[in-house]
Length: 113
Image 1 (cartoon, helix red, strand yellow):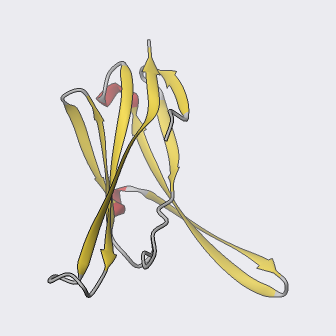
Image 2 (cartoon, helix red, strand yellow):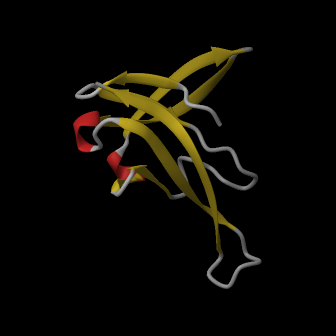
């Protein structure tokens, strides 16, 4: 995945988080996001994210959608390319603890001076 945006040092940023994996449900299942730049990192748990639930009517059916937003101040990381490491804890009875960890890593934001 390519860098999706850039901004200036000290900016407060907000990103929508979407995880799609067979058997994974963002509302039901747990996940975490580690944001890194160089030796600086911070782990955001699911409970650290901003949650927004909306409803809309599609073909006479009410559909509920839940969005998760990662919000932080770029002061925490300094100037440079930020990397996200997302770990989704997917229910899977083929594993001894019933959970399969799926990890994805990508650069997503460039902090400039």
